[in-house]
Image (cartoon, rainbow, N blue to C red; front, top):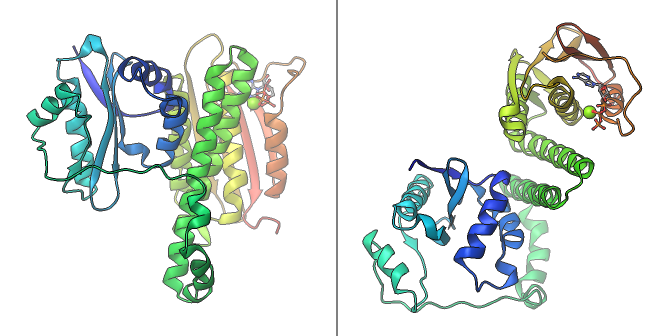
Length: 361
Ligand SMILES: Nc1ncnc2c1ncn2[C@@H]1O[C@H](COP(=O)(O)OP(=O)(O)OP(=O)(O)O)[C@@H](O)[C@H]1O
Ligand SMILES: [Mg+2]
């Protein structure tokens, strides 16, 4: 049996859901996949692992790190695959990742009635400590009860005087916005999985991809804290995003020299790239199930040229589709950059956006 332990991705949602239904049959509704997964993705998704056997989810584990101690929960292995080392492999993966983050001790809880789980952890070196385990559910009303809330509001004015505090607050804000967008993305992806209607699935997948692009730009740009961004790493990040989203359907090659563009061009440019890559995959695949896409961005003195070329059938004359909106969006965004879109067919479709080095305010 060849088992792979990987970080959770959207495509594992269904598999994890059925695994948890089998492993935790008595779970309350707020512990089902649709409630737990979007929240986990928002916090330390890289500590959410799944075990795969030829692509099928056979195990899961969620870990967390608070900067001092690590935590492990929702470890589950399909009944048919128990006793084969899957649980230990998941634990080793989580331990290694937590160690990388600086964690030196992991805590976990086992129900007193679950002797089998306790024995499993004991074999992995976990020991019972002289502690009592306590917990409390905190209701939303706790927000209003917080005695620090008013004091904190007053404090903020003073604290913001310190530049480094301001930067820390900015980072915190960026982080939260990123998390919110990830939640939004997961909700759209969950809605996509729930619908049987092919057109609705396509619309929801496109929307999820757009949210992801906005999140990547927002995070990449703001965390750099500069006025401009490096075009090569920008394009590489967008290419990675698209590769993740389209998987084996697309091969994305990037050809971009290092250069810099002002931050305000980042969002329109990223959305343009996203639409054009999406089109290349949707329309360039033809009857095949794979497309090669070349993405290039050249900065000249006075202008930048973005081009997306695929190896598909190219633009075929015919009536436009009922719901075609992508190229309209690209044209509008190119206009925002003070540029324009050209489409041609030459060994596949080629879309080029030329825009000025200085964009309109
Ligand atoms: N890379 C491409 N290869 C071949 N044809 C393309 C390519 N990109 C766009 N087209 C053609 O141009 C049309 C318009 O593209 P557009 O992005 O506006 O709409 P869409 O992709 O059909 O729908 P939407 O973007 O709203 O999901 C497409 O329907 C398709 O016929
Ligand atoms: Mg399109």
